[in-house]
Length: 89
Figure 1 (cartoon, rainbow, N blue to C red):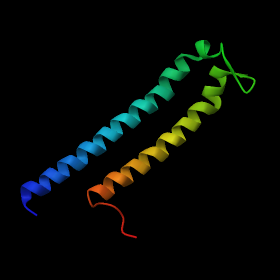
Figure 2: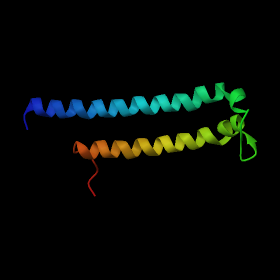
Figure 3: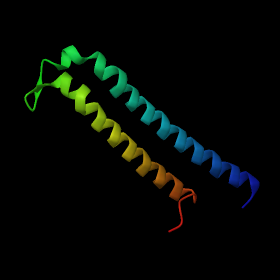
Figure 4: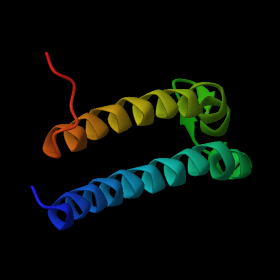
């Protein structure tokens, strides 16, 4: 593999990793900052008998964080495998 080709592969790998990180951080900021700021608006609705804003702060955001972490790991593993950096099994 030539040096230029290796640099190109490395640059594409880091571009995909960077883009994934930006999306994850944006989603994290939304659930950590925007959703709590909208609690009074969300409380106009109910979910499982609770005001929706309360539910999103107490449980919804935590569930979203776990899902975000799972999706990030799943996508990063796919990116690693695509560029040959995956774990050997």
